[in-house]
Length: 306
Image (cartoon, rainbow, N blue to C red; front, top):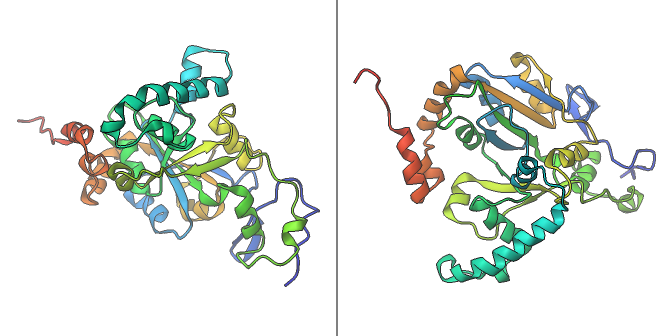
């Protein structure tokens, strides 16, 4: 097997795909980040049936950026302080005060890893750098459209999985999935700045809520780096700017994109919700606890003529 000489490339290895029999860079600026307005459930189906792996995040407003709760905490308060210092203070307070709930929680927060502690803080609504994602497009659609009657557009973000843990996927894409040849690793450029890359994490405590939501976290390597800055860096420093595409090119877009933003107009949200209901999704399924039981009250059909 021929050893690939990577020294001619920049410090970031260009990832490639094969499209219509021709090898192309996945990260051409007019292909990497795209936006599509869907007009029916049928426009959603190509994302479900594709073999290309994406991670999904649903947001009820298309105007919201991809921001973690700790980013929003600082933005809302216009605070100038080290994010790392604040995150350490959060963890210290959590470990000190939540240890009193050890009998209820079934574990001692003082024995948790940092990421498990952050996952618990995120689970209960505290400020962290973690952002919730799911491997299921339907679940992302549910979160985007549930009880959503005011926003003109909801959004589902689709992030191609090869972008995550980039230093691993760079090699695999470059070699087209072939086993690594001797000497290839030595020819790779210096490691990227891990603090700027996006990373994934699944909590070691897989409760029913996490399992049913098929959820995990994506987060920047440093709390000082915003989620979108880390995303831009992971996409070869391409600015987060969306290119609007015609819905007729959806299947092509799925193949050629690293990040897709699906816009769901208010007019088709009822159709999307019916599709999800017929698929068996509900608040009681995604939140099999007291919270889900209460939130399911929003799903009671309302007949305006009664």
